[in-house]
Amino acid sequence: MSEGVLTMRMRTAIAVLLLLGCAAPAVFAAEPIKIGAFFALSGPAANIGTPTKLVAEMVVDKINKAGGINGRPLELIIGDTESDPAKAAVIAKKFIFSDKVAAIVGPTSTGEGMSVKKIVEEAGVPIFMTVGGDPVIMGGNFGPYTYIFKSPQRSSTAVRKLYGYLKAKGLTKVALFTNSDSFGKDGLGWLEKLAPEFSLTLVAKESFGPSDTDMTAQLTKIRNAAPQAIVTWTIGPVGSIVAKNKAQLGITIPLFQCHGLPDPKYIELAGKASEGDRMPATKLMAVSALPDSDPQKKVINEFIHLYRDVYKYDKEFPINTHSGYAWDAITIVANAMKRAGTDPKALRAAIEQTKGYVGVSGIYNLSAEDHNGLDVDSMVMVQVKDGKFVPAE
Image: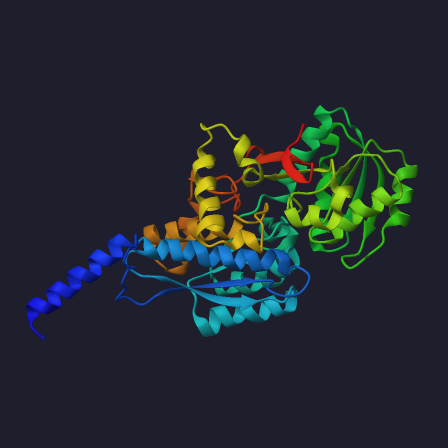
């Protein structure tokens, strides 16, 4: 075949791509940079872990299409924790010692995060967790967190957002209803510790198990304590059971959930019982109400466009407050790799020096003392109204 014919065919192919609106994918000659990504793809937390994994793949695809990390593509090594802390520990060791990953993202639950904390610290591999609880980056009795970061707001930050709202509304007598798992215990600790700061009185404290299906006994005790507000701290379907049991008992005391439950699934499972429930959330859940001057609005709208219109994940997994966590974690890690490479110590230091990163879940300013970098102003209060989440009144 003549050189002229080959050139003509190449031009034709390029013209076809342009007509179809397609961009040629980036071609990489260098070895990929491996990132371990483990989430609860099965088990009780799969409704959170599975879409988080999809978002991780989405953002890596975006980064690679833009040229990767200094000419090297990112490659995700996926693991399923099965919502089991022990399984998460096994996968973390595989990532580090077998797959030789440069960094890790995940897991899904606080219990899983705590199970891998010591492993990654001793190995010296940076991990950006997508868990809600604070202990993974608290230090002290919880162990060092030199190589550990997390993208969701701290439980303490969410408590402050919620308590500030209660105080502003004059709701000062509060009943606590918390899960007995790691996340619930973390929330309970902060709810108790911060109550005096907001001049709140805790008139009742009850708990439930992660797999409980009936909380009417505890809710009856709470009603008898005559609180002005009920604050529940849990994630997953069990939160919807609390709302339904409350409605079944005819309790009209307002119910407040934690920052882990702003999710259309909550409304689907609780039905009409969720109407009026309020909770702290990321700005992702109220983007239409943000002013154009908010620097997050553009970032959030880009994320929503990719998630809904391009990848069409929203059909099976509607956007919720968790949706942006993997996006922010991987982007911060990728940005640090562009600056510092993949040497573990240099990468860890570069992640810690992140300032002013405008993400889906907030504007991150990390430091040696704060491996989360988000404050109360990264959150909004939302409520369920007519079967949808809207800014809280």
